[in-house]
Length: 106
Image (cartoon, one colour):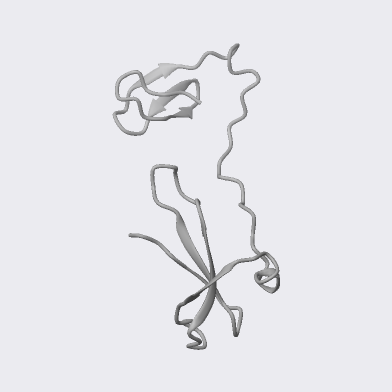
């Protein structure tokens, strides 16, 4: 991982250069130092909560209307799925039909 010397943003690799997505600053990549570095395209899939195990895992219940069956109660949990500087996402699982939905803060 490389950070921009100009603005501090994370840089992306483009061929033999590091390129800042924010300010466009470029610098040459050092192939010797990067020999052991791994570049990934996407974030790994996070742990998925099995709906049938929701109660066994001790998930809390709350008053929330299911958009599928209109039940008024759901299990809920929070998980960080975006970058660390953004708030967590709330996930709900209907106690009746086991429909799963999420609620973001934006």
